[in-house]
Length: 421
Image (cartoon, rainbow, N blue to C red; front, side, top):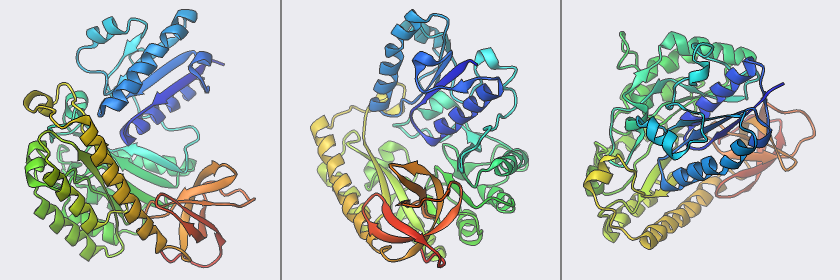
């Protein structure tokens, strides 16, 4: 039986697209293998949002030259955000790659058999489901709109049918993904909103949980907040990227909101959903960022106290607005120092937040095993590890928390009802 190897880096959209590719290959009779050397078909799903990610991608492509030279019959393909409109240039740069195809597209050699949506043969308890492609925002630092194009939403009926089938096959939690899920549906004839989609999906029997990302502060509507508050299966957890805590930097980023507007949105969410758990994204060292402007970001993080902060140092992305219009003038050592400052602060905040769960009982959806323990996540996206000899995969279990840390929790099986998390 021929084998396939899919290597993925980047966002949840990439993960979802890799799952679909893998499902299609399985339907065609391929089996997954652990290394590219043992695969007949190799697909690299790339990301270039950060320089570090792009470097890993190019290193991976280059490393496969030897494999292709030794086994010229293998098919090597590259997709994801590395693949722009200048595919001939990519072919010239990496002649050992057989195919390049854009993010979200079907492989050119399988276009006919992949005309529909392939579902995983054995879906995981948690499955990413794309609800839209592309982005219309054109944040100055972001390459995504140039690589994935403008926003294109899938219909409510299409998404509902897919998730219903996934649940029938064993999926228990679905994470809806898009570059900006808050603008879902505006391009469809009946213009449904994300709140409408969540309401429909909430009715699916056998589905335990619903999540969605990524959100945009300027597009999060009161209707969506009401839906999160009122729908049983929608988890009370939101990722709401602020990116910076200073208005001048936000304007250069072309984010479309002020810090005051972001604060008001957070306040509205917490009034409607008192037990909400919030996470955010931060970019440090954006062009022209002064120490005082960076301190505004630190102050905002200290004030709001997010459960999780995803932080990255700015890196120039060729083709973006920032690359054309702004000089990358913050020295790398200062970027690194600011990165460490945010990480240290968030470790303290995460430790404080998670410590409140000590002694409580939380509901965990079990996703797998690692180093002899089961692991899964709470409804508020807390990672929990616990020992148990019984089969627990895809089950909802109540875990009594016995140890807490900034990034994860430890516990033991309980029988009483969950109290938080």
